[in-house]
Amino acid sequence: MRRICLTLPTNRPCAATIAAIGAEAAYAAEHFGAEVHLLILDSCDAPVLAAHARAVRALRPVPGVVVHHLDEPAQRDFLRRVIRDAGVAKPELMLELMLPAEPSYGACTNRAFLIAAALGCASVHRRDSDSRYQTHGGAPVFPVHHELRTLGRRAADAAPRVSETALDPRYADRPVAMAGSSFVGEPSVDLAEIERLDPALYADIVGLWAPAGQPEQARRQLVAESFRGAGTAPFTGDHALLTLVDPMRVDMCNISFHQVHERVPLPPATNTIGSDYFLIHLVHDAALPGVLHNRNIVNFYTGARRTGPGFVAYQLRYVKFLLSMLYFHAVYDRMARAGGSLLDDRQQVRAPLIAGFVRESTALDRTENLDRLAVLDTSYRQLGGKYAVVADVVASRRARLLHEAGQDMADFALLIEEWAALIGAARAGGPHRIPHRPDRDRR
Image 1 (tube, helix red, strand yellow):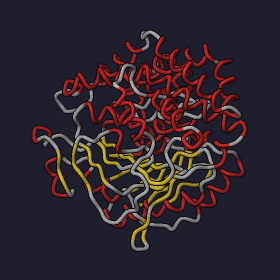
Image 2 (image 1 turned 180 degrees about the horizontal axis):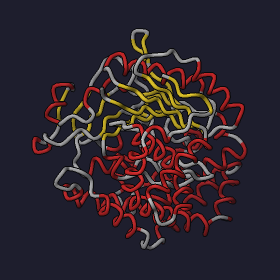
Image 3 (image 1 turned 30 degrees about the vertical axis):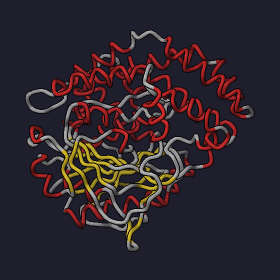
């Protein structure tokens, strides 16, 4: 029986999402005969945690579905054991990178990768707590449908299971490493108010994540496409394309990976949006086959990011994202030029090569990021009001933000270097290493 990990990391109330993803887990078990480990990684405070535990207990028992609901102490216990068994050089730093005190999109998914290895899962399927499923004909449209039809199969064997193929035949023997889609609804990055207030400033601010020196026409196209997912069109029928998936066409709220996540982790950067998209680029640049389907998830916003401290915190995450692009664009360029040499003779990603690209990027000149901060300062002050407050905060933290962007990449390189040992220790430890709280695991 195929064993998979369907995971939901969360740091916000999402009882309704737990119920919905529980239904997706049931669908995978009932329609594909999979053993589904539904993994909820919960970083919420006690009252919300308790509400989530009640939502877990309310899930319909389904043969083949095992639910794991882990609070942060349980996650920390698991990580300490894995890190100890892996024998890494800096265990306390490694624990901080895997379970930081501040929010990290990459770190929460890396924890899911390690726990999935301990559970013996062949693939990891990630969803987000601020999203929900579309419906068609009164039934939810679950992405796992296309994921389980194709993920892990040889591309040649997956071809009859998709609607269309646009893959070079020389990749036919490679396994499908990723299956994913995007979202409909609100943009993935909450900048819509800026676009309403001043479209020109919006273009300036969003365009900052483009590579330096990109032609203006390409920059305008990037701005037009950025953070909008698949638009707003509702699902009307299935379509799946076997291809080298364009990273702009998929989102981490609607993604699944086979094997590649056991070779290279995600960047553990804190307080940075977009830090969890690295593997999508790696799969594309290494010419690993993927499936792009159209079971898009519905994205929505919670109110916390639009008022008071939550607003400032969210804008700072966007600033850190922009600063990270100095390094990531350099790494992506190296990966794109390396192409097929990113894989060894077993069609596995050569992790040491990726670690080298990441580490070398930390020596880049920071002038480009100084320019980004200057444009942001001017733009936010022109917007005025709460955006001017953000400009003041960014100005006061300028040196710190520049340093953190570089340090984040150094930490990522270290994590890549230790990842094989961590995955091996997690797998060797097995499922009995996974704690059973705050809610007893259930089958």
